[in-house]
Length: 596
Image 1 (tube, one colour):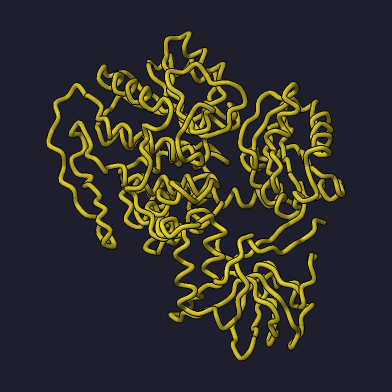
Image 2 (cartoon, one colour):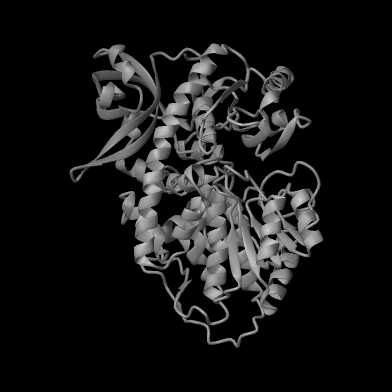
């Protein structure tokens, strides 16, 4: 079992709670803090700062002027699906009809751009392929396209594992020769920057231009002077500056789903995206929100990451991502209703399959003991779910975890990492036996021949011996500040709500409170899964909830002293709004160094 250690998030000494919160997020100046608390869309970076953006725009302009067939080539996860929707909605607004899309089948084609798909697109008459969220390592597929006379524009954000493909344009902030100021854009983020660039440099269409529709302020705009153009006037042959703001809800979904940094430019895009989502003009997204019972509610990163994104991901995981993309593109109410219902049902099926595979993979990992890297492989494990299972088991065992399906001659798997351990480099150490691989330092996918699984496992363990430190395997739970119970007020919670959207690099603020007296304790929920506590400190008292911590009910008694790490929040029930502490971790007082 991994060690548990509580550490304050910022190493900078601060006399105030707010100072600790800001320092932990690298906000050192008043200007940094202002931009963080009140991000303005106008502060986004110029898309033309990105390498090859000018070449991409020029080639798309030429294609549209000549009425060439354009194909948007996407991967099958939520980041890629929303990226495709962003580009296709842009072309749709221009009424450019000679455009289609292609999403590979996860189960028969696998991840990324493949040569057979390129040949299919050639036969369809495509002249230009624009990839979204994939393509940066598709060297063979780009060469095949070139041989067939197809041009390729790559828009991607994944790490480069070799050189740069011989495409017409390669737009990726991770290019070593790219000087774009923000390196953490997602696939949908890069696609959005392309749309910004295209609007900044309007495509010269062959049809005559009609008057630009008038701008209208979005209802409910909180006085920031941000104008959102009307969507009326589709087919006018151009879109006005600012049209892309209506696409920000899609950008928010893909960015949160792909677990990238929520500071810098991503914070701007997601913050405004959450705002736009409450007024979304995409009927399919509205139906999906209604199906998930969050229609009309305030949108936050939790609702996007754990309610909306899983339903969009469910299509590509369980069947084909076409269903999700069609939902985001339809303007037909009846079709939107049907597609939303289908995604909701697929998500329920995904949840059932996840629990089954999770149980089987966990059994294998328990037998592996204290190996530094845990690898599980099974037959009949749904390829679209192994990544979810790897993520859950990484959280449970706090080890890098790789989970793969080995039903055929090739095993397909996903990996998740811990600490600073670079899982894509660990996998890459076996490049000679891998069919393909790719991803990020913390999450990756791979394919290899089933007969090579044990060699692969040994290579990973050998790599871990020299590269995976004990610090990486220590479960460090970080908190922002030490507070007292009396400091947790309505105003306190309302202020920390301004830290939304929270996620990677900007975690939900957590606080440590020591020496609390337990007054009441009980286990609640199905199978007594969750913990309900009432605590007191120097006359102040609050209720607490600890999800999946019901086991503490048998260990705690009234008048026991505990220390907690918690997330203060409002609990709204039956029209009442009260403060409660969401317990992240707790120990008996006093905390002595490491816990667990």
